[in-house]
Length: 149
Image (tube, rainbow, N blue to C red; front, side, top):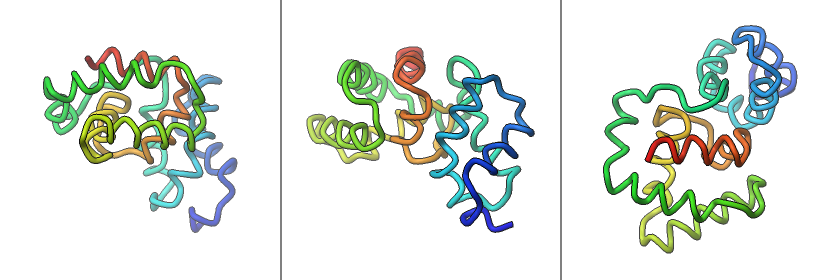
């Protein structure tokens, strides 16, 4: 099956069958699927890529993600947590807010997105960061972000 042409709901169901998530995990997988399916080559790869969305709190960070979370990055994440508290939590709004934050910090978006990705997913590889934030929801995303500080 060509994943890019498949219905996101069908792929989400196939991923959920492999991961056995609770209702919150299913909703997160469904929200992530449109962003994930374009890059993945198999349902197994989709399931591995979606694993971070399960449960409460970020999974343990891999070596590269831990290295990304420097003192400077943690300070930036603390400021970002404050900037993201409240407000519109839609993907377009999150993208705009992240870009504005990066500009305020005087860094490129990657200087914000990569440490944020590490904090939220435990990895430097994930769907687009606005999709990750939106799928996790404000409460879970801010919980994970603050836990990484």
